[in-house]
Length: 385
Image (spheres, rainbow, N blue to C red):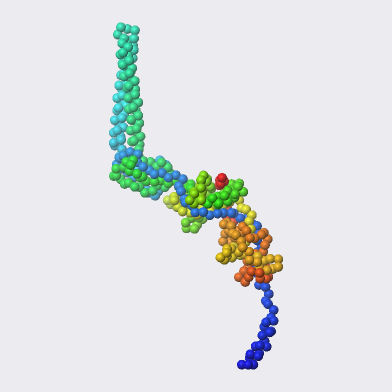
């Protein structure tokens, strides 16, 4: 045992004097300015551009419901038919009253003419003329009143056919055949327009100021994209059309509104559309024109409790931990850096797990990265003013 200890003691200095290994090899990429589409995300709600509650305007028994619940209807389509018989009878009575008063008026006009024809003769009586003229004027007024009542009867008869005031998707009917409906019966059904749709979303005042700056720099062009509840990006793009004129005091936000197409899904037998009134979506506001921004592969960015950081190789070939801020327009493939990096700086991408802050490294080219395809955007949004 003692001889073994002596051998180890003799070997100790030789182990301690071994030279350190070479600095770890790392792959680096240059932080470069590249075209990027700035974007920001908000929670929004889809709203129909038109929404109409259909109600009865006369009182009668419901004879027919002429639509399929949940289907799309066109403006002017017949939805309900009420019992028309009482209104037809009333209209006939009004027509008879008009005819009666017109006949009486014709007779009064003849009496007036005869009374006036006696002027200059011993039989002429001014009072008789006055009476005849007054009677004629009264009958003219009665004819006008009867014609007005006839017109109202025609309107009431037309109200027994309840038609769609707008085109759109119709909901569930609240009444069925045989029920007595009146103007106080409430909403019979609701129609919401389908194409285009609004998307309403609140934005903090600070974000509105930033959007105004971006809008001014890009000649006012912003594009709206939507992320649906299932995570898919909605195909058509929209434009901003309204910015509210006041700030909500309790939330310090302003309401912005966009308009976006909602065409039928290709191949859908019933013309189904993707956007639904009152649906919750994610709104993505994108610049139409790309801007130059510093970008690096997303895998080069690490994070800890203090935030995001990268390792940069300095002129002395030592790794330096650098805190960075990422833009919201960063993607899973590319990190857009808003602060913390300069154009041309060398960022460690490969071998990053072997790097320590301040440690010497041996830099070399990083392995090639697959460049993500650029997404096309559609112009046409209005500026934020």
